[in-house]
Image (cartoon, rainbow, N blue to C red; front, side):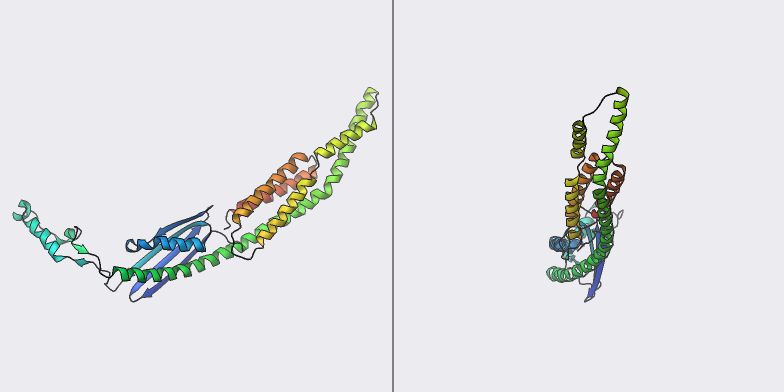
Amino acid sequence: MIRSMTGFGEASSQNDGVYYFLELRSLNNRYFKGIIRMPDEFQGLEAEIEAELRRRLNRGSVTLTATCTDTTGQSAYTINHLALANYIDQLRKTPQVASGEVKIEIGPLLGLPGVTLPPTNEEARLEKARAAFMGLLDRACGVLLKMREREGSMLRDDLVSQRDLMAERLEVIKSRAPASVRDYEQRLRQRIQMMLQDAELKLSEVDLIREIAVYAERSDISEEITRLQGHLEQYIELLSVKDDKPVGRTLDFLAQEMLREANTMASKSSDSTMSKAIVEIKGAIDRIKEQVQNIE
């Protein structure tokens, strides 16, 4: 199945007053690259979430952003009154506070070590968050993959049209190749006859045939045509796969091989009709190389 690498998906849920939200954004990348942004208290889940992303998505730069809003108050830190009182007693002994020049403010003291203690139910909260975020990840991946498939369907239509254009131009080249040799023979005969008339000389027919044979051998593109046809058959097979196996890299490599054959044909051909068809084939291959960069 042809899928693009760009997509978006999100999902949210609410459980016992805790609101969970997860968002996925995917862009093109030669390999898989995961960027995970989790709340600080749930960063321990990043490795597990990235492993699941790698299982579901083969290629692309994927950014995951997750948030958690707890409205129950269970996530509130506990104030260590003994530690806070100890800090206040020490501050009161300083000359500035004792003289009344500086007043003690409680707010800044809450950030001192040991003044606030994390909730005692952290492990239970982590397990709830794991269950919630993994469920949201599955839903968000489903939405993102559907978007990738829709864009992949449009990409496939364009790639098939480029293949059809190449196949059509290749038929033009195949039909024109024998005529190009005959045209060369006629031009060669005319030029030689004009030169020989001026010099009052004669040319052996054997020498003329040898020269034509050399040109025919040098300009023969039958092997390149056969290989390019084989590449086109493999190309359409890759576009027709039904499983989730990624084909983007294979298509990219195949496009490079097709361009190699087209360049060889261009270097051998001196026929204007064939040259025009080859240029159009190379243009289609460039379009394919551009499009397959978007395919997973």
